[in-house]
Length: 184
Image (cartoon, rainbow, N blue to C red; front, side):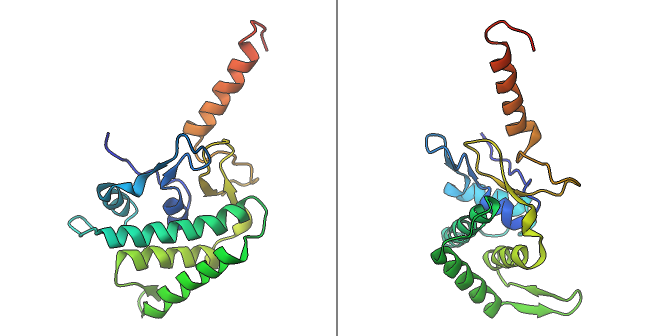
């Protein structure tokens, strides 16, 4: 089956951490970056590279490291907890390294990286710098673990995808209500 990236986190850095499916269910966890072709597919879909770019194992390893560091910090924040010091230190190292090697473009004025891995790490930095992290949420499905920015007016988004985890939850509730033959 061909991997089709789901870019539903509301930010490139969140779409990066969401490349692990069923993160909270060890029996179903799938690392989409286990195959280089999936990494290339994700980078293309996310607009980080153009067709024909070379994706290497080193780039993949860099992205996985950035993904795991970002997830450790972001999942804690999404659940209303302060992250442990070690992931924060790792995140700081990741950001300092990429900013040190980035250049500044004048028009439009922004930080730029010379490589796709740097561009994604800069996106992680931008998430922390530019976004309202009080809107950061973790999917309400017990096994999913995907993160997203809740941009709804009333801050009530519960699912990474209403069509995926949301539908499963609604179907589960319907089944529980009707399994004994009773009607709602």
